[in-house]
Structure formats: C-alpha cells, structure tokens
Figure 1 (cartoon, one colour):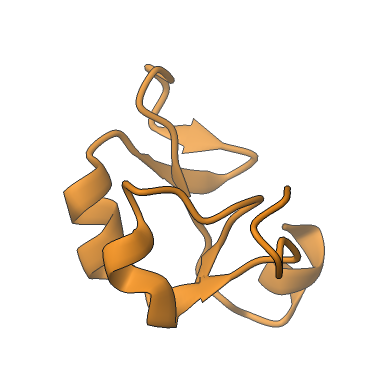
Figure 2 (cartoon, helix red, strand yellow):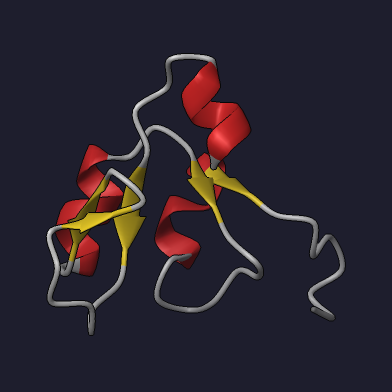
Length: 67
C-alpha cells in the first residue's frame, strides 16, 4: 500500500468487519458492491465468486486459480 500511495494513487480498503473508517490513512468501505463500483483496480489474493463479475478490474498473482 505504501508504494501505491507514494505514487499518488488513492487507496480504498474493503473490509466488511472493520468498524474504523480509516486503515493506515486509507478509506475503509464495508459494502462490497460500493467497493466494486468505486474501484478502478482491485488487488486481491485470489479471484472469488463475489468479485468475479469485475474480473477486468482485478490484479492478482493467483494466475491459475490455485491460490
């Protein structure tokens, strides 16, 4: 996150259980649909069914779906 933010990119964190509005000075969003709408790029550990409908926005190292 630090490297991305250093380039001036706005970072938004999706975390449904986190009650705080900020995480390391980045905005926290608790609603997945809102997060998907507002994001240009989504960095994820893996592609799950919940985010598969925005696959074109996802960057992941899990190229083969094996985690």
